[in-house]
Length: 109
Length: 110
Image (cartoon, rainbow over all chains, first blue to last red; front, side, top):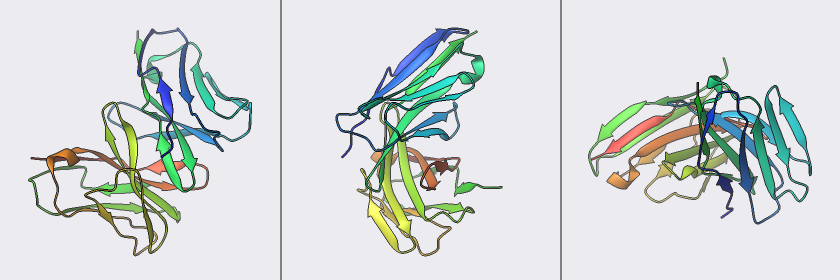
């Protein structure tokens, strides 16, 4: 099935530092979604990207879809303690969803 | 309020004792899924359903069954649970754009 590699697996940052997680695929993707899962919670949809080179912003979060549509990134500027959680990318291939393994973000106050 | 509900939230059972985890959504979505989440492996799709009476295997269907008799409900059935099915399970309901997840069911099989 579809493989989506996500790095890093863990990231510890000081509050105020930036954070980036990356998703990579060996095949061209039609779309990519990003989710956030707070500790003890369920995944919550953040955004979907569909266009080559697309960049979308949500406050301090910036999402990018690569020009070749094989990679994507989520960048958080000036992290806050409320950003703590695991961030997942997900792709829909055919009728199936495939998730990356997630990046767990710890923010040190 | 748009939501996906799952029951039970926590379950401890023994090997071989059949169990069902219920899932219900109130958003009239056609697409529904079941996932399991294990440390280091992310979320893996077990089964999905495109509509009533239409179900398909995901990446890890072995040991699981599902049914979709009504649009709103999508139960997950473990006919003979084994310890390797100890996991956190999520039901999800989807539009073409995003998935809405239930609160999760933590299952322990001893």
